[in-house]
Image: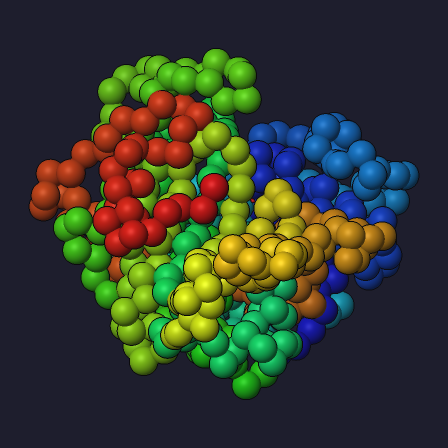
Length: 479
Ligand code: BG6
């Protein structure tokens, strides 16, 4: 089953993702000599365009979205591109598409970056044109459904034509270097694993805060909301990587087997364990921004913020809350994981007046890639009035530790793994379904309780109830 594809077929080739991420990532890989010379990239979408028009389109996207330090000569990359106009909803046209793809020497990788409503018809079209054979693999971009039922429909439709070992489901957070580094931190160091459990960890926080608002994705976002847009996928993947047992190997089966066990151990959330919010006009970085309802042009009950107190019901994590929060129009863009350790069992310094703070590990995923471990240290002095202790940070800034290393777009890694056929950083069907099951139960709870989002001012950390959610347990969100 293992082959390196020499054809890459992009559905949705004129879309936003293709322009912002896929074309720039492919270009960057090519510029670093990581794409085989024979790899041809065929774009397809509804718009009518010739090959050369598509190349111009791609050039414009690269000029707009490539980071300045990754730009370079484009001609060779553009020569890999060709384009076929296609109405994906009807069978006509797929034969022409197959002609354009030609006969791969080794194999074909297909990337579906279209509305999920097109997945079913596209699979049928590909089948009719003989484009689903044993040397074809299929990559799916989110959203994979809006709940468990629709996700199963999509997965069933794809499974008609492709076995699971040829299906690659993207969660672009898994392509981020710092997310993969979480595995290195946990499993390439001896000192964390013995402490990585309920006996030594008090709680975990996972924050994914964004400053952006709707970004013109009006219809999509208002139907999704923060829980389906961010929690169901990215945040649960982060949680699974933090909470999973050590896999025996770094390979697709071992890693995903461990992640899915965590996802299946998530306890159903109780009434008081979630808070939702929707932003109103405010200011971020001194810039006035409109409210969600104003951006949308109507009232809506969609949440742009959600905080959840989650529990993983297994031996390792019994009684350790995982506080998750994500929101649009927060004061700053930050994705981080906080591991809050417990206090030492007995303070030998208590009689000398010293107070202690428990250790804390903060793993910064973006924009700063930092790992900070707070340790207690003695404040220098002769201590005639008692011993003073203070928490001091042990700080590793990844860009300094690995200066000179290229900072890659998450999709570079994922596209290369797709072409080469490595599924480790792609999400398996059972994971997606476990994620939906948990999220569906939360949404059902909101419906049953008639819970609607509380408002928060853009530029704040969400509704005050989210702060209370943690503070009730004596926990303060890390900011
Ligand atoms: C996407 C969501 O999956 O992730 C967006 O649909 C969100 O709403 C984006 O903005 C965040 O990704 P990143 O890589 O910028 O953190």
